[in-house]
Amino acid sequence: MRAQIRRSINNLYTVENDEGKVYQCRIKGKTLKIDKYEYNPIAVGDYVEIEPYSENEALVLSRLPRKSTFTRWNVKLERNQVMSANMDQVAIVASADTPPFRPRFIDRAIACAHGAEILLVLNKCDFLVSEEEADRWYLYRDLGFKTVAVSATTGENMEKLIPLLKGKTTAFVGQSGVGKSTLVNRILNPDVMQRTNEVCEKYQRGRHTTNHALLLESGDIRIIDTPGVREILVPYEDESLVSEAFPEFSHYDCAYPHCIHLNEPGCGVIKAVKEGEIDSDRYTSYLYIIASLIERAPIWTRNKFRKNKQ
Ligand code: GDP
Ligand code: ZN
Figure 1 (cartoon, rainbow, N blue to C red):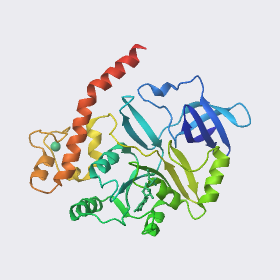
Figure 2 (figure 1 turned 180 degrees about the vertical axis):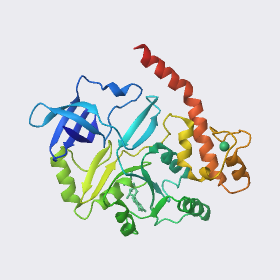
Figure 3 (figure 1 turned 30 degrees about the vertical axis):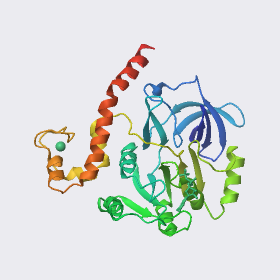
Figure 4 (figure 1 turned 45 degrees about the vertical axis):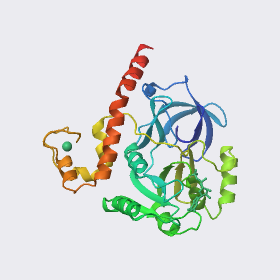
């Protein structure tokens, strides 16, 4: 029987099958075959095959193929950690101020998403931003990203955000303090109190906070809320995948087919940066990401080695 992961906490999963029936699950035999190099074999949003063994308990037998993932590098565990799966889009929530606007964070978060559209949400737009920050923000729009600036407290531009969420599953990610919880609660409004009570009953969970990922829905808006994080680092993966987060690079040709635009001769991207056609701050973001992957390579190799020995 197919079911979707709604909540995942300490290897205990709350899933809902296609008929809307909820089960509490563990993984059969404790581990799944697929979890070789991953920290968590199953994330919120994953579809799994389950085998019920009581009215509301079941075992997870396998994970079904994913159409998209949002994965970060977990520094403590030195492993890739999938934070959500199978969403149509990832809403990266940033704030205009408190905490300060951080385009590097946004660039890294974009690179953590694969197979999903990106929606950039600038919250706390009731604060003023500097001209330089505004330019950097509008650059995303000019590069073709969907962007919307809102205020979760005043409600400004919520009417622009809501239609972008309808009929879709959206994973919300962001640095703690940017106002993600306030925003998510406001989206699930106006019946937020009733909603949280429902969640409480159905998933045995209290007030809507975000210390672990959770799939919520209201009408045709489905949200995977992920815990606020201090930092987001791109997962360890092939460097060439990072370029997907920098669509502006794709307009330029490089002499080498597998160019990663670091210092290769005949690199069209480096030339475009020098000529001012590619924003140099975005390119700097890219270089930082590539550098972090190269730096991490020995750890990754060590982990693989450790796993293989077991
Ligand atoms: P989270 O850590 O991202 O979930 O952030 P919270 O939703 O807990 O919000 C952090 C703080 O920012 C709280 O004090 C909120 O009241 C405040 N906040 C949230 N949204 C806005 C906004 O649009 N404007 C302003 N000025 N403050 C906001
Ligand atoms: Zn290149």
